[in-house]
Amino acid sequence: MGVFLALLTLVFWGFGDFLIQKSARRFGDSIALFYITFAGMVGFFPWAIKDLKLIIASPLNLFLLLAAGVVIFFAAMFDFEGLRKGKMSVIEPVLALEVIVTTVLASLVLKEFLTAWQILWLALGILGILLVSLKSLAHLKKINLEKGVIYALFGALAMGFSNFLFGWGSRQINPIVVNWFTDAFVVLVLAVHLTRTERWKEVWQDWRKSKKLILGVSILDNMAWLTFSYSMLLIPIAIATGISESYIALAAALGLIFNKEKLKKHQWWGLVLAIVSVVLIAFTVSS
Image 1 (cartoon, one colour):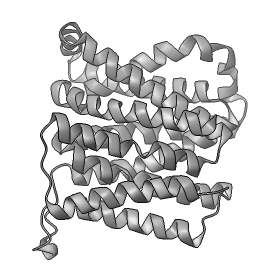
Image 2 (tube, one colour):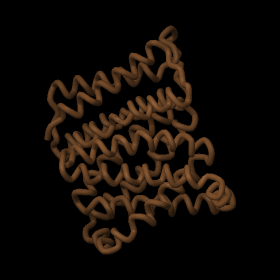
Image 3 (tube, rainbow, N blue to C red):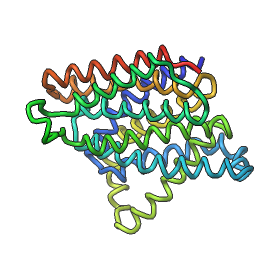
Image 4 (cartoon, one colour):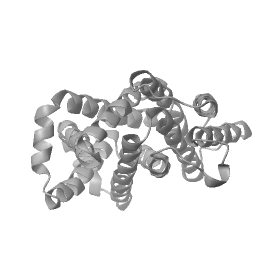
């Protein structure tokens, strides 16, 4: 069941990131993120309300929730900006770096140790990420990066931490409360930002014009986080992350097919290498 939930996460995130790119380009990062987190806050509340007391049941619970809220906010903003500026087929493999961060944290804190083969797959994944991120291999000293890659790199690092915190929090508290709290936290931060920048009229106008897109991306992204959180209750965090992270193949393929994106030969090799390494991690990481 844990593997099945991780595979569902793969599908939800694959299509979800494709719609996130469209949302970020149409509404801007903060408004796109507001729609998604507001939907999660409202949707999860009926199931979370009976367990809200767990938030302050222990200092560790509160710390995990606040840390997850802060980290997911920055991770999402970096991810959205990377997707808004860059090619889907380039940004998605870069975001695969998060599986490395999550796996290392799970090893250090929760003792989900790595074998020599698993370390090798992680190294190949990093190499693939570097190849797909570079526009040209002719001038490596200048490191001519594709648009959005820097944002994606920071987003991947932060998302790796958030994956770990979501997994730990789901085990310590429960997945519904973790998802509701983090959505509510991000909504609060964005509400302050939207008020200060006087953009509420823009939020309402975008909703009236693009209900289908907003509902689609909100449902897919929130379902992805929910199934991901539950999968980490049943299988090791590293395995759940490794399997679900294979969504990069689906999202990159959608970018190539529907956005007519073009890659150079070395970037194709990087894309393949990043995807293969993540798949191998999914099948080799053990608790």
